[in-house]
Length: 419
Image (cartoon, rainbow, N blue to C red; front, side):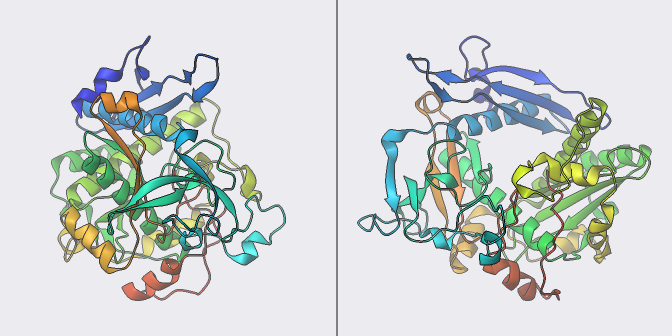
């Protein structure tokens, strides 16, 4: 992935500049990559400008590569090529293999009936824009609503919030595809845990044999920041960790992050690194006078960052109490019976009858650099949103029971804390 840095050029590059961000109050290499907007010869805006964030506890170069990679993901996802699009409903496009939009995790009828709800209830006659992708298990082509794939464009109708879950860049299709699958599993685990208020196992930090992480824990301790690493792995058996940083004496009071990877070491470190970044971002937001949040009485006017700000001041901390009530376990116990390779991850998804779809979003200029950008969609997984919670999802009910947890039968009404 080092060649990804070749695209950085202030005048002609897809990415114009990469900036260093302050490592305050927690030390972590942090970069922000800014991608140029693209305008055609008639002055029409083709791709909006965007940015990507990269970070690493150990390497400035890795943080830069990650920042540019994230900017590339968004660059490609913002390009909406009308030449590749079909328009119609599920019923009118019967001659094509297409994703049933009703299989996608969605909203319950009572949510659609709420006054001011911003999305229209969909059915097989709802008109969408569609783009061709691949059904990974059948190896067949499949048409997918563009609102599940692109982050901009004329989608006709929208199924859910258009965020970056499942979007990934890499030096090969396999690398990008892996990233998308793992991120989708991560978000599914977060929402199953959060909406059911599951008190899941907490890892004993002393059992983690990683010098880099132990140094990070010591830094937090010196700054009166408590670190909680919660094992939120689901029936998909891919190591998934949810990190909560708690600072009783400063701001932010709460910062959260998560990571999934079949290599548990990467999952652990990735979750801690992201938590550091979120903590620093919230600290900076307050310092610059931008730490304001919506009270979530109107879900139509909230952004993803407001979720973390909602808990950063500590006012709503009680909603997180259940997170800290799980059993303390060692890392060794945490990784028992977990998957440790990507083939096993895919095989289990197939065994559980979960569809795995992907779309190649690589633009010509990115392809020329030998890079790939893919969007992966696993329609039945729980979905992490920034506005209304998506409660029409069988896994939200089935998985906690499968894992042996007792639930109240009611979903958590508090907004999730994920940034």
